[in-house]
Length: 126
Image (cartoon, rainbow, N blue to C red; front, side, top):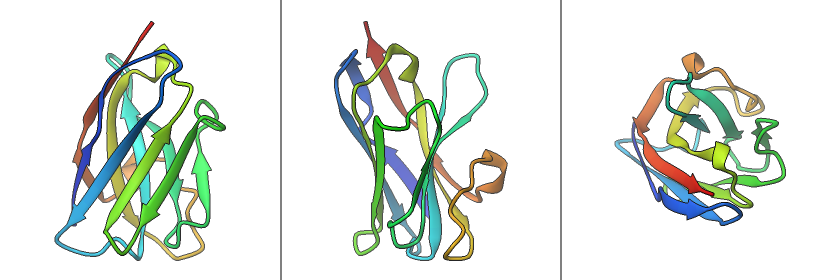
């Protein structure tokens, strides 16, 4: 499975932005999908993950209540809706996918995800 994230850009503090991840070369319907981000000089960190069906989501504390992850298996896509953005949300955002049982979706370690796309840069300006 190949993943490609898009939708990054320059926004202001308090703005909203939606990232999308398009998959090709296979179906994501039985993969846990995740979003990670990496700020300059920092390690890659977990942002959100979502179960096969999309009914269950898991968020990092830093984005809980502001970000919403969703997926559309029919379109082979995943999305990250980011609201009330902060300067500290500035990072390169990556989508990732992992083989896992249907009921297991709370995966947060980047080393656990098998498939990665190239990142998309999000810059939040104050």
